[in-house]
Length: 362
Image (cartoon, rainbow, N blue to C red; front, side, top):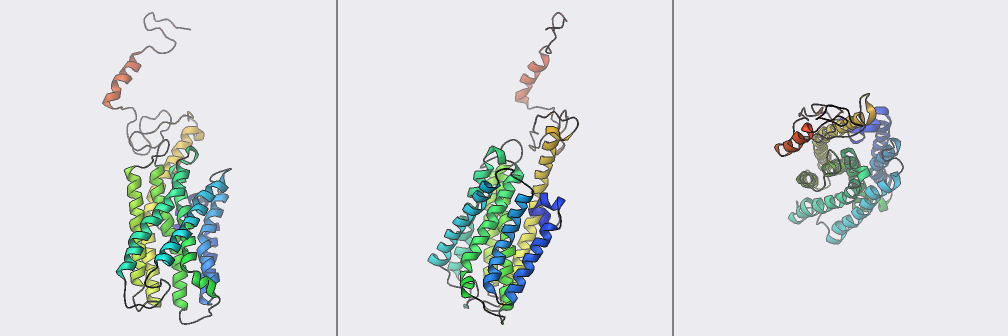
């Protein structure tokens, strides 16, 4: 569980059945991005980098048939809606408000306090709230209230936001045409790798963790609990640390230098590694819940088809269990307030038997 395995983390179902399909797809997209950036074909490099992970992830959702007969409305709500809002918000803060330095590499004497406030306060807070809208709407529907659904919705929203944010921030590269190989090749490659591959995974993982807390374990979704609030704040902090770190490291060696861009990629990978480990611990609980629920509903020979949930960890209970299979809690014990009810029920005559005469009733 505590290992850095990217594909089986963000695509847990498909990775088990076709472990190489998505690795190959992401590898081809990564290679195409690096080659086109190295050749100076910046419009192609940015477009491939922006859409690579969203396209692969959406194809994965169709492949595993995660939401059966409703994939289009689900993807539209979690990806297209988030993407449209991402485009609008990014345009507002990058063009209307504007930074005093260019993220793509303009020279500057040093970091700006105003830029740091925008990148570490305004952008993380508002962008995370935008990414929560579509996934929370979907996770609040009875059909999609499992923890795995909530996490997946969050990943879709995160990669969608990153895709459209990248297009807005680097529209100058897209509209600038073919640049040709040059001294800035290392910077170009680092930027497209960061924006197209590292950033979407950071956004998706952080948002997915927060929405997973909204869905929660057990019957129905948990809603706006303190755990969800903590998850959202955690996502905002991760985004702020990522944005601020990349911005400040960009000044190492001079604004726009290759070494600063490479350090930004390394910084993003470190954050992503920590997020991946955290995501895998949450997914472990979600997959365990799904396995127990499947067994209780008919996946085992003794399943009753009815679900009960542990009062401590909210995991599904296997039929006729004395203890929870997930946390070991005794499921026969009840709170003191419920003992009176249990005592009355246990003292009542069994159905079909007369406790007074000892005769069988019709």
